[in-house]
Length: 351
Image 1: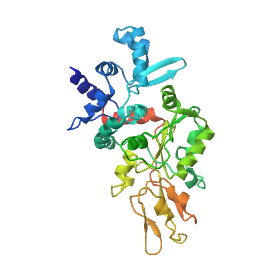
Image 2: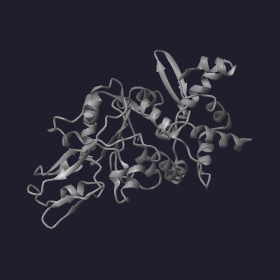
Image 3: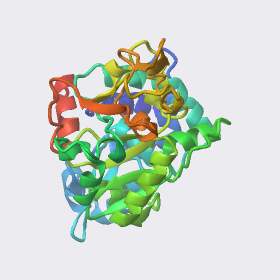
Image 4: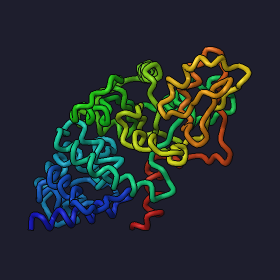
């Protein structure tokens, strides 16, 4: 019976927007057994994608609110469901595994969890790649597009931050995971930003600290100086921004080894090098995390299909020989992350 509940929970998680595919090894069930007790699994499957107060859940299930409310709050504190607020009211909902439950485990993860997730990553990655709408995208560093007036607000990190009232920052789960696995990265770890209801969730769970806009801008400068890639949620109003490196980020370190990484990253910009201004100092090639720049006979150049539009090379060029140019056919992102995952739900054909 205990094993059956995890099979059913796996199916339930797979019915959520981003999916939770089965594997030949059953590693996905090992993850669920580690995270959920059988009772927690059963209660999670009674929730919906729509936020509900404990009283509403209790009434729907024919149970006592006094008994159910602390259990729902405990699930939220463990990062196994999502909690939002409406004034003083707390509302609970089932939430997808990635982006979602996995990231919410930042304070609970141990080496075993990291090993299980590493084994599962190729399968969840294939599921995410099977739909048109991406959950995350890449935008250029602010300094790389500072002199381009036509850049849309949704591609300017500072404009995106200026729209936010509640901001939290915490550890990067990817770099923490790699450290637990014995592969510590030298990049700063306290650079994972969340906003709005996601920030409130992380703060309520003591998984981050609240900061203001000016502190956010300062930390974004730290990220740029460290050579990190900006990956916000794929939405015009961002809910999170990851500052990523290709040695730790699960998605980026995978695509770096492909011939055309740009095909697997949503980005509106790419770099171009002016050969007349390039002095072949090779700083751009050293700075690029995608190995997208190579030395030619007389100058450095961008390798076709490798640039993901992060702008790290632009910020490092002493002669301003590199510029970001907008790709053809650029489309505005979804309004917010809820619309993003709703598009994914439709594309996957789940209710």
